[in-house]
Amino acid sequence: MNGNVPLFRLIVDALADQPFDVVIALGHGIPREALGDVAGNIRVGGYLPQNRVLQRASAVVSHGGYNTVSAGLGAGIPLFLLPMGADQPYNTERCITAGAALGVIQEQPPGPPTAAPPPFTPPDLAVIRDGTRRLPDEPAFADAAGGPHAQTDALHPADAPPHAPGAPGPAPPSRPSRGADAGRPAPSWPWPAGR
Image (cartoon, rainbow, N blue to C red):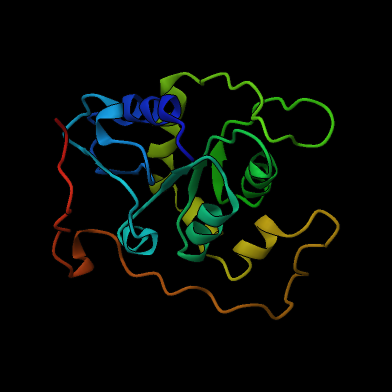
């Protein structure tokens, strides 16, 4: 979410004390202290290996940027998206339409995207919390995110048609179980939980 501390804080507040772990990757240059106190179910790090985090994820909360969206869909993980600008509203709309995501689409100013993000009206915390909780609980989201054409159908160029039914496409991603029966020990995170 590219240094957007207020958006990170919004997510921290929305997902605090939920019955699941939350991993927040701040990226480079933002100290963990910038978020202040966080609940015990939230772990905060700088730049984290996205593919390793996604191996254990059951949902992704993101601004809807292409890299995180394509990585999440490539791993078969449903998304909750909070787009800020540039390609993010388009990616969010496509993922919601494909059934692989929930999210909040802000009204965008007319004309082409600019370098400055448009104003962002934070959604109510319950919208983020309830949407994020729905994703792993409703199998249709994971089915759409993990389908063989999820990435191309959700992120195809505006002028290209989605895959035709029955057309050959990429193989579905391998999606290990993320439940208690996954056979893997709980992760030993290299960053502290809560404060």
